[in-house]
Length: 319
Length: 319
Image (cartoon, rainbow over all chains, first blue to last red; front, top):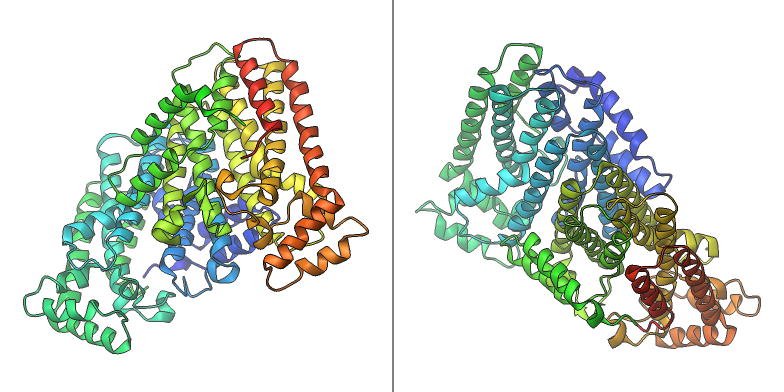
């Protein structure tokens, strides 16, 4: 896992900027934003942006606001996603929704989205802004697809990969793209940074989904089994539903009106026994391998070392 | 009230553009957007933008996308606002929330917001974009203020006016500003158009709030008494709570755990008897008077005639 200490200084700077920029004098907003910012988080997206920018040599002053913008955007989707998920815990803290109710959570998310867009309008080039809008639109469509696909036992691996590409990987890719593009990186380097982050994002989401089954609630800081309970079927389940010896039993269990502890633990046994947890992990590693391939094509510098470090952390990620 | 026929051609063009631009191939999104667009609505905000643009002579091609952008933005706030309000009806139709559940409604709103921002990034000048972001941020703060002020019987008239300025009037003003600014209007004319729409927006929201008490459910297309039931105290109630002979009884009724038909009808009697409904109407007309003052300072042209027509419609508004 990524050592937060390693990036402590830059994360502190980022947090301070975000706190200052989002202060509104409204208790609900200020507390919610404060909780989100101080609640930890790896800040992977801003780090990708900042590290990718080191491959260029353009204006570096606008990087911190841009990095704050992508983190605000990410936080807004977390809050709105929590409303969907009815997740009880996010990063081990009470969600904005639990603290202030679902209604206020909608507007806390909107407020963060607005802060993100203000920063983008102020600092991004028009090219990046257009690209960003396309990605945010696809993120929404990804969320809707996930919603429409709830409790659907016919999802293919391809449906799943498409969904996580939109839901997660494209924003990773966009972060690297923005950092690079806005500091003048073009051509092959820009392409390789974009693809590196895209593949990293794919593996990140698969691992994230795996942790829903295998993770320690305290470590991952959110309720385990949430996806399963709310009908969001991720890779291990989708693979299980394709396995001849398991699909019948798995479909039967998932079709139950109420998924209790007994059913959940049987499903988990099936996942272990059938090997689909391991298969999923292998697929995640395949994406990491691809990410590495793109990374290796980049010129050697300090930032590349750091990106390699982040990539290696993914391999051993426990939260 | 505004005759929809009068603007039929342009509204048709606008609707077609919005339908085309927002098509996603996702059932939930397409149906929700379709319902919103075909569900009527006066399209006041796009009309303000388009009419204000007639005072300038810059590029007119980008006006329709901009007008669609402000209407998408407005629709997004309606959807997210409905999640807050738990309103059962909006424009006489089922809300997105009722049709697809609260969870999907969050993302339908986000999707519309994204579509709005895409259009703004494509068509707005950076100056307008920055102004827009400030306004959207204030709209969020206005919504949060409204939420934080729920069931607060100490609200002042000034609190209320500040809230509706943020919640409604600033977007009206922004629409006129954008239409005018983007077609080259500057100086006094730009200022007068902005102020005209701001004052119009103030009176619009006061009237809207009055209709919550006096409106016919079918005509206004939303549940009456909703604000009252959900603890959003608007002008007539705030004025009532300041009246010596009424404040005690009103506070007592509003403090009840559950507001039934009996309490609501007594509150309405108090509103009538105390004259605060009429007082509120007079305040709305005062804002209309101010709007007219700014309008009259503008050069005579067809658009001014139309803005005068819209202003006069506000006087007799029933829905």
